[in-house]
Amino acid sequence: MTVKTEAVGREWPATTYEVGKEKIGEYARVVGLDNPVYFDREAARAAGYRDVVAPPMFAVVYSSPAVGPAMLDPDVGMNFAAMVHGGQEFEWNEPACSGDEITTTAKCLDISEKDGKGFYVFETNAVNQNGDLVARGTWTLIVRGV
Amino acid sequence: MADLNVGDAIPELKVTPDKYLPHRYAGASGDFNPIHIDPELAKAVGLPGTILHGLYMMGLVARAATDLAGGEPKALKRLSVQFRGMGAPETEIAVTGTVKEAGDGTVTVDVVAAQGENQTIRNAEAEVVVG
Image (cartoon, rainbow over all chains, first blue to last red; front, side, top):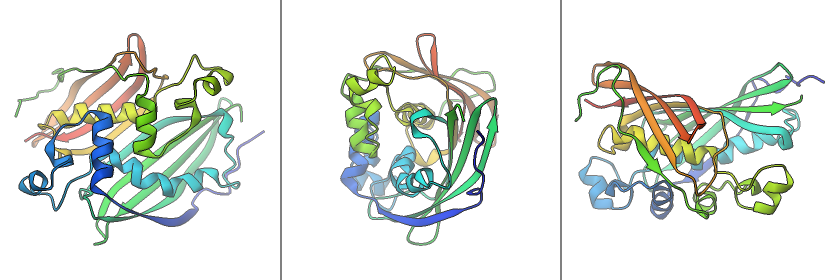
């Protein structure tokens, strides 16, 4: 059996996520972050942010709704039972702040096969309401026994 | 700001996630994959028990990286990781790193997250503005 590659280059419909102050705080507490810029509007503004700012890895929260349907697409054909998250990269640009509306698009960059494993690489690009790039993500999923 | 040079170790971050951490991370992130929150299902698919979300551990790597800039979120410009092992709750995670490039107020750090000998994240590279 070989991997299907017809989905390489495809883009999926954009998703929009409105960043909320309490959701930022919830994420920050779980990861153990204590900088007041994640919880307190005044502290965030004093530090030069427009509002309470999201931790960098909050990118997962606003980008996942875009990349999820891409991973589930039958044309991609990933076997979820044998899938592991192999690698992840984010590049950050404009900070995401409470009240921002982040629009994320997902694209399939590559599907390949090596040593019986399928490698599925997706890219997400998240931009804010001003059209500024917030975060670009590269998601690598590995499926054993393709 | 600490003066970081090539070859310097970054301060180690040690965290022991409690039994329910994956539940809280699931709620915070929206990733409710049952292998992270349902011990019976996790065992049924051959795991020793629930496992940590890889992206939670990446969150700890990001925390260690931003700590180099006094916890400033915008200081972290890029983070790339490879997930190489499963992490378990109720076991200490140590995030360690070594500076591999430094210049123009930016450092690139090679980072590892491990539970004992089990390196759950390897070949991680963080680019942080420290100047």
